Image (cartoon, rainbow, N blue to C red; front, side, top):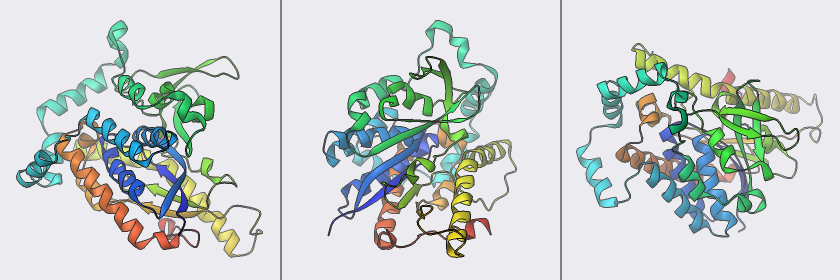
Length: 345
């Protein structure tokens, strides 16, 4: 049976993007699905660039190798024996997250990020992700080869979303999509159409990720969203760290929820016969997530790439992708795997 084509929507969320690493690693192993297009933001853009570059070279294994290289450079431990040992002797993920966010070292770093501008470094500033991204992708390959690929960034001056695709896909645009303004200087990119130079921050503020680039008529009907920011938290945030974390999650989910609400509205119109079926594309929404794990984590585990935690996130991503392949893949091309109307009930 031929693999079913899917669009992937990859969220940003710092080091929690290692969960998406695991999801992609498992999907690339599968013969049941084929990646037709990806819309990515921030950490999702890094993951997507690795997959795009690998598939552009014609190999799923190359894409997996590039993902491994990306996260090992960011901080993952490549020795499986060490990882297994750490899982046995390290406390539950929630305990690790709590210990990290309340540690004096993290709190001091958090204070510095709010009181010292990344522009304070002057001529000594260098984006630490640049070397990693330059080693990850070849700009010529990511333009047209392999699945369709676009990434989202936020225009600092206008506050509007910017989607980079085709020839506008560069190392700088990937860095722009992952540019947290408290940590990195804005990435400046010249617009080839106007000749003006614009400054960009993380795309999570305006599209995490943007779904509308995946509505093109020639793309598959199915959009698989890989969520790494929980939509729902049962526990009320009460500490400064918990409050800041939830603010971060809400702001980074707001653009996605707006697009899902619009999709829900179109679906209702189609169901009620108020618009013709062929007048608007009825996209089908699926999600791969592990909200239980993400509720145990925090803004600290997003910012500090602990090898042990990245290993657990990758493992959780592979398991969640397994769940999708076992339970939801039969819905592809037929129906949503998510009750999208219930999200806004």
